[in-house]
Length: 127
Image 1 (cartoon, one colour):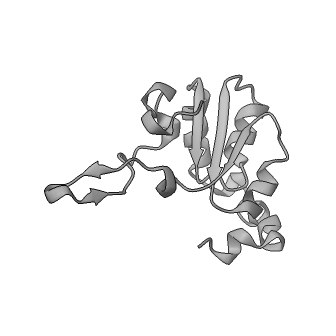
Image 2 (cartoon, one colour):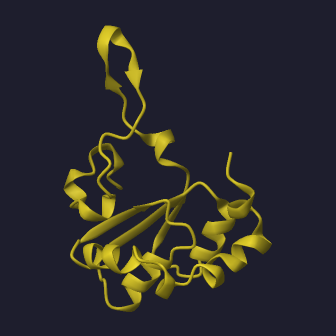
């Protein structure tokens, strides 16, 4: 279930106002990684601020945002030159075998997708 903050359209409209790019320490770091990649899958893209900025400053490759909150994606979709997918990583995560045939549904790596070349996305690769 998506938290109300991210599913209520009225609250989502305030998200980027209350969490502006300039006050966040992570976005500039990730922007550099995004700009160095040919294709990017932003897992938990929210309102799409990172991918929007990448496109604004010239990223010409494939950009795709994945988020479980439709209200967040409604804001992100103001740019149609970026792919937006409603869903979560857990729903598409590959399974890995553990002892005695049990399955582990966790993502295979904690490394941000933006830091990985598209060829290493494996089952997360986009068609």
